[in-house]
Image (cartoon, rainbow, N blue to C red):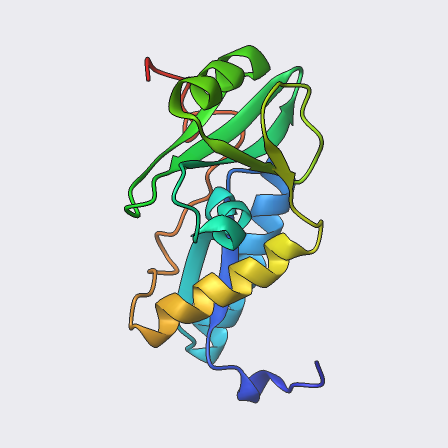
Length: 164
């Protein structure tokens, strides 16, 4: 973008869910900028960024990421702004959730499930992380760089599905 480091007003970073290495590297770089340049930091959950282009929908939106081994990580967003997730489940469990709630599913990849699935362009996630992060920073909502943690696609921060 042709910017110098001193021209930055803040840092937005994806917090996951996602893969271990990618989240560790991304958060390390973002925290480094935040600490060394005294910049405010805003962490944005990956599923928030995937769902953001459909925030106008009156239906529930379920943002989905593939997690390998026939598993997906997803979060549901209601039209009133409430959300739940992330959930680490099988595709079959996701299909039941979408069917029960008449939800609109958005993913960056094709999903082998019935129902309406919106495919988000590959580059949209980065743009939405920047937009959502900037919105938070402008509102004075920022994260503590020392305590901001990633949400992994596998592991203790992305819980197994519970009854929905």
